Amino acid sequence: MQFKILLLIPLLVLSTTVAKSQTRRTNPPKPTGAAVPVVEPKTRKVVVKLKDGRSLDADFIQASADQLQIRIAGNVLKIAMDEVAAIILSEQVAVTTSEPVTPSTGTLAIEAGIIYKTGGNQPVSRTEFRLLDSDLESLISAAGLRADRGIDLVSTWGIKRRYSPDAILVQIEESIRKHTIQSVTTDFNGKAQFENIQPGKYFVYGVTETRRGFAIWSVPIEIKTGQNSLLLDQNNAATAF
Image (cartoon, one colour):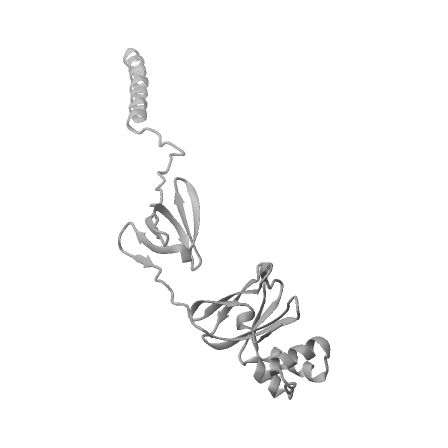
């Protein structure tokens, strides 16, 4: 019996070891810190058509009412929306177009100069011009000034304004100010531009000194939507000396 008991002990130890070994093989430990797969967001492809005729294939980033942001070859490009004719999504589901906008107001570009027989054109530079809703002669007359004998009313006002100012001239200047829609100052080339003008009939008013005296403009003009232009010289001045 002692022999049998001694023989069973190593057998029990051996079977226990084998069982533990099989357990390790059939139940491997779970790995820790396993990497989670990252799903890259889909890039939205667009075709941007510009008003100058160019077409750009790009990745869409974002857009606002003023600006479009796209990526081309890794570079971010910012484009003003008023330069964009169309934005076409690659899915062909939505199309955003920029239709030509019809302006509701007008601009008036002016260029003023005095043409002399000798010395050519002299730009009327650094001079204020006004857009009035009434003609100058009516404003002068409404203030109570009367024309001197032999000359017109605007010339009378110009002479008094330059050589003999008095109280009535202050009233005329105040009336001109009240009827001013917009004022601009010409650059050194005699050019300036009035902006955002409601369509209608106006008068371009300005005064400048000449070699012999002065020139005064009160030129009627009808402003239409979009771009308007006007050349000013002694030929369309109300008076010029």
